[in-house]
Image (cartoon, rainbow over all chains, first blue to last red; front, side):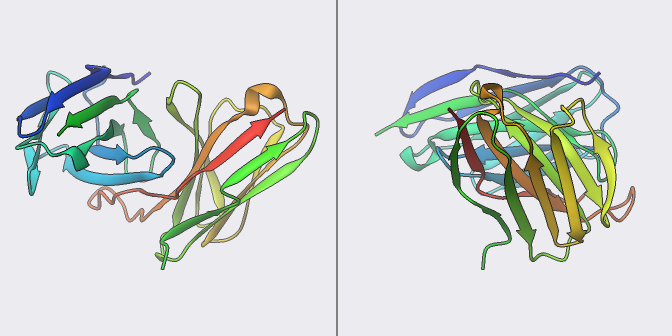
Amino acid sequence: KQEVTQIPAALSVPEGENLVLNCSFTDSAIYNLQWFRQDPGKGLTSLLLIQSSQREQTSGRLNASLDKSSGRSTLYIAASQPGDSATYLCAVQETSGSRLTFGEGTQLTVNP
Amino acid sequence: DTAVSQTPKYLVTQMGNDKSIKCEQNLGHDTMYWYKQDSKKFLKIMFSYNNKELIINETVPNRFSPKSPDKAHLNLHINSLELGDSAVYFCASSLNLGQSSPYIQYFGAGTRLSVL
């Protein structure tokens, strides 16, 4: 059974810092991995999707990497801003159209 | 226009009642999902439908019954509500065109259910 773990559970940084969020999964036979952002009282917004054959994806100040063999992914946020404050969720999908298995999230606070 | 919309956004009800949550997507997707986010913010899959057919049914009490009248809708009906059903329920949708198409799942804003 796939299990997804995210470290740290919470992170507080001053504005402008570069930071890394970590995600690990127990079964490396994944189809893709997605990083989501969840704002309080809101739904999930997909940030980046990495296919199992890819090593990284970039979108603006965000860079996500995937090391399937070791069961790890990282989300790198450059030059953090207060607007980046949210909970970041990592999720793996094992086959096309199947469920997402989520980690418990990292709650990020960027202080002005 | 909202891509995945859920109604209601908030639902407060008494134990033992029956309630429904509706979900509609206007993205032309063929797969829809229901997830439950508990008080610890942990998201878990409940059901998935592809082209109106049930394809995922996790270990969920049979008081929960999904219904998909068409590809664009997946409603969740809950009978005999219990205190432990209090959570945020998220609907999502995606395309599912086979192994070569890793499509993103798009989520609704969630329905916060409180059972008193």
